[in-house]
Amino acid sequence: MSRRIISDQQLGSLFAKYGGQCAYGGRNLTLSHYGQRLPTGWEVDHATPISAGGVDDGRNHRVTCWACNRLKGDWDADQWRYRLREYYGGTCPRWYNGEPVKKHP
Ligand SMILES: [Zn+2]
Image 1 (cartoon, rainbow, N blue to C red):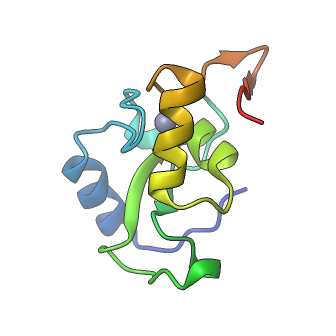
Image 2: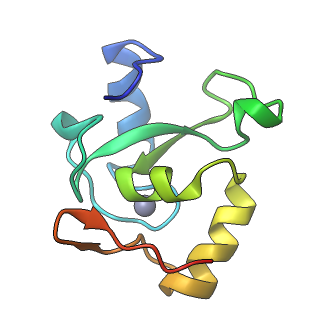
């Protein structure tokens, strides 16, 4: 389950702003798969986590594939981009047997 933090209209606008791609690794996503545990599923990430003082509005919202958002955890956007480059070849984590494959420590 995913907590819906913004309206459907805002979700659609945000999705369009990022060209329907994950803001971190560029995976092509499906608008209707919002909140779904799928390679084409996506969520709204907070680039700076709320727990680290990030705001909950459009300045801090990023379209993020399900895998990136789950594996990013409480890192901020720069920390996650570093790990994507170091461990994932700069692309979104791959999926295997219905799970995103974690490669970073
Ligand atoms: Zn991603």
